[in-house]
Length: 611
Image (tube, rainbow, N blue to C red):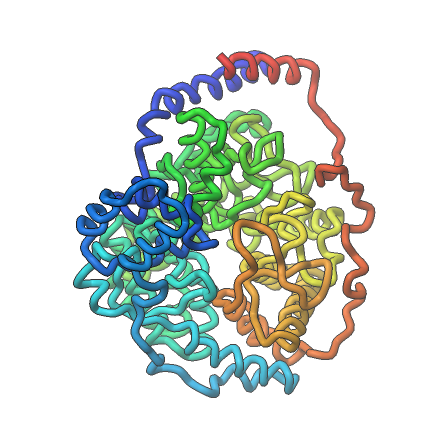
């Protein structure tokens, strides 16, 4: 019976590829947006190929001095060769910017001395918190009316209300970044700014049907991890403004329905009794290069057929939608960016965030008196919890792990996304066992050695991938979700670990700030106070979600955190976890438990899929 079922599963995977192969040409015709300048066409290609700017994102962030048809006509009159000098002159004559779309704005609700400062005992940390509070004014943006009145001349999508950006090359708002920015703004008592940002997101949902990656036209086909509903909940907890929440409930439901309509997949895990669950994945229908990373994508797709390139571009955009752009988490067996297959991975963190969304929507509707919709979301929440247990939980590892649709198995490599179900509270419940689960996760983190680094917890243990969402980088949102998951545990040991990690993360951020007066988007775990590296662009400073996470930790642990503490692991000493053997590919060796039958079926799968 097991043999026959496995064979059917493998055949199903192969057959599932057929529609994608048939649709490959159609997929290849779909750009990031409809603009013939910002998203597709010979002008975009010429400007990017000529390296008018070192960063591909810079060109698509410029605004046009003339109407698009005038610029396209002028471009059509250029003579070959379209080298850098020719294209640079053309761009300077027809475009302006970047960052000229904004007008000066000082938040009217900015407070120089939020009450949370009183919780911070360490004088240096209190002064630092004041500096971070000042940064909201530097990172605040108000869009000019001309962007609204001449929308076709801009890649920036107009929103009415001011907002706070991450910083650096990220000149627009970003979806999941904004959750931690909003947490920080609420601690800074900037509730009007937060309400405006939430209203901007709602306007995006009402216009596009979902919250995009950011407010640029080239982000119109992809989103990011769905944090609008949790962000609204943070605002509600801080203000008790349920009238506002009730007024936007239809838009919140629409945002949720986007994920349930466009990003679902039915998963059947043989090892879990072959019960089917509807879960979510990142799956962007776009078969051309990302405009903001145009050259990088074209280079990655070099030597591929048109259909293969379209599928690659779709997987790259899907990884960008995940926020983890890029990570070995999404790679195939070759372990390279070209092998990326994001759409074949069912992510544990995305489904945990949606599980939290379902709980919060049930709570919102219940408070609004709509018991019918509240019941619908409670049912969805319970179904999701069961799916997270059945599909993602690994008894062998003692953790929640991504599910690979191709292999019909969990990915047993460490990624910090493994703690998100615990952060979202999507475990235990009616079936009990919360403490046992929490203890298992603690033991897993210890066994993987990820708690032993001086600068934080690494995103993965994969070395030398060159990707920024891999070792040795640590990212603020993941550090926060880990710390909050442990802090909310029923185990005293977990609560103490939460504080220890909060102290470690606070210190590495503080030391970097003391030296450079800069907050970075990511940090290197192998040292204290060192920014991260890798990926498509240099490390960025600012930085919205970094500031929000630190303010959150200072609010939670300010009476205990210190700026002069000596961590137990000296900076620079730990470069790999204790007891970890790392191969030349950076993969931590593990025993293989497969059977000869499964090996044979795997070979059959390869043969079938190659036809």
